Length: 463
Image (cartoon, rainbow, N blue to C red; front, top):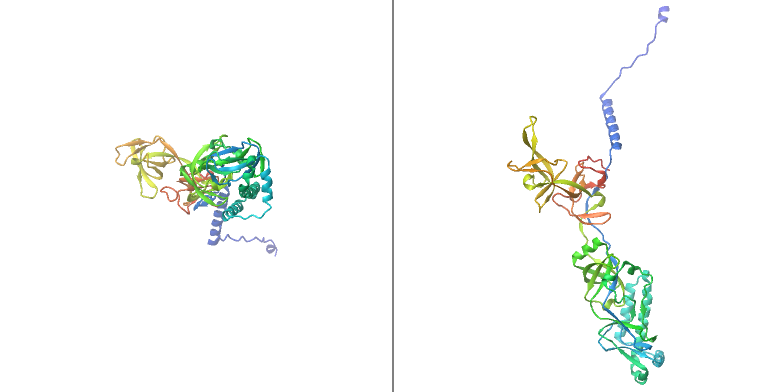
């Protein structure tokens, strides 16, 4: 019994029972852990899918109108009464206005205005056109145009009343002076001080001048000798000068002519384009016309839209664009492989015993210059001083000449592959490039959104 009591109880150790399921789970766990670590240690590149598109260019401008204008001044003092229609053409010596030195004619006209008057169909059409043009061109940001419209309508009414009094002037002829046009032209009854403005005199301040004011000339108003009373526009040729960005201005000048839409009445006119530098050194564009001057005779400033074709192609972000350096190799030393973008070269090499030999290499072709007949080859494949052979082995070429290309990093194959682009138009955010070029991009390609975070042949962790 003593022997039985002295026995020790030992704990049974269960043997490790490994099965195929646990082994697979362990391998998967290790793999996932390594992938997570590599994910957080590796830079991630956002990709962008290339699409066809165009850039919406802001083609709305406010321009200043330049005409051949002559201001006419009063020879005698008195009450000025106009007879020529505003925006109407007069010949040399045609009656434009009369000066009532005593005011008697003004009193008779005031009495006549109380009587009933009728308007002809032409006069009604003039009123209707004035109202329609004002309604279509009204802009609340330029409310001062409302007062110009008011003065214009008052002038029309007073000129019509004055025309009806022509028969009574004979009795007052001793106190009335007749004033004819000094030359032929179109009459306007306002001035603003810009009548002698030349395109080269335009500055940026003219478009935002808080002191700008038009002086309207009203019938039956008192004028002193030497005061301006009206002006004549003597040529149908006129122009609009608009401020532009130098690059945009150069592009428009290359067009030669551009279609201009006037927002005031939605009319469209073709204008010739001239790029010029203003008096303040800023860049301006002069749009010249040979017709429709009379339509906008009452305006010094006009809001216009340039109707130009938008560049269409592949739309890519500017952040994707990068510049890369390449070696230039004459075409006789490169053997292209069809349309694959690959090619072959034969380069000099040295064997282990020091003897000179040659090796064939497959290389990527990034561009071909039609003028110089040279291929662009990756500078990571070749080195300055490498010697290339023709296929027949007769001639050699030493690698040294370099040039740069503008392109993006293509991500279709999971690594960064440089592709050349040809930019058609670019703004601050996007660029339009040619599509389906031999060594370039195609629609639906994936490219790196930020080229600064990518280097050549880098394997891409996308997101």
